[in-house]
Length: 420
Ligand code: ADE
Image (tube, rainbow, N blue to C red):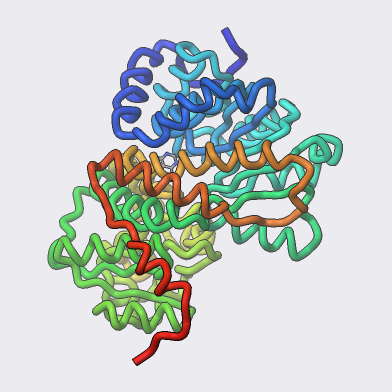
């Protein structure tokens, strides 16, 4: 048995079924897996992946292993692990996993350290915790890293700050910024899975409610769009004037958090930023307001501030729901301890959309290895050839054909002489 720290290996059979179910909806990643199994491009490469341990991630890790990678996996969030999947990866697929749903911060970091001590040549991150740890505390191991991939917006924000500070120790591919990732995973994945997490946690009826969406990036757009489609009155909050304008012209009410606080029935943060909802906002909220987060870190809601403000905290009024009674007598309900509600209270994005993100991850890994030594200590975009390959393969798997330019059109688009 490979080394591991998972909840219970007896869950492996259930986890395997779940992984296989997800695989049915991941045809593009399966194609990459077949390609890797033949080429063995990753043969002997030590890899550490810090990702949400889900059925979809299991299929990514199996793909990398099929390519010959010597890979270990740890959780990228203490609440997102699917324990049956973690068990199956260890017992059925021989992949070392360090992840337990609900692990405390100490265990979370112990698991990260185990992934660092694997001395990876290639790392894969979701939120940048692994890269930050290697870069700040393990200079020797950092020197051995050829490159890394980053899965999420929050992680890319941190990486760009590291690059600016000269703290980046190896090249990183911003997989999050690929169109094959954010147009689909961030928008349709987050849109659906956030609604899913909220409903599973609360049994909340969206129709007719006032839903306040903080952030109008791709994740916020997706969530706002889905809530509108389900009959909510949606309010969007932004700090970027262009995105604020976009939300207004998409038909949403746009205002400040101070204005939205007394009106909202449900608040969801999807910003990648700190303390978007603070005590001054909690004080104004209606009785029974529900507050949650679908951004990567649990810092978007000022939970310490909420705890200080509340005169009473009742944990677990339902699974993933805690009640805070404020001095004004009103109760606020916080979902999933302010961690990403879509992965904590539901199963994250559906496999069909993770198919593209994870095919892009796998091909970016191949790219990093092929270009070993040629890339600088910078944050790179995913090459367009990879994006086009993934989009073409996904269209094909959906049975969709698109037109090709005629030779006449090619010529027209590359010329400038013809006008009115
Ligand atoms: N991020 C969002 N949804 C996910 C999923 N299903 N698996 C892994 N990472 C995710």
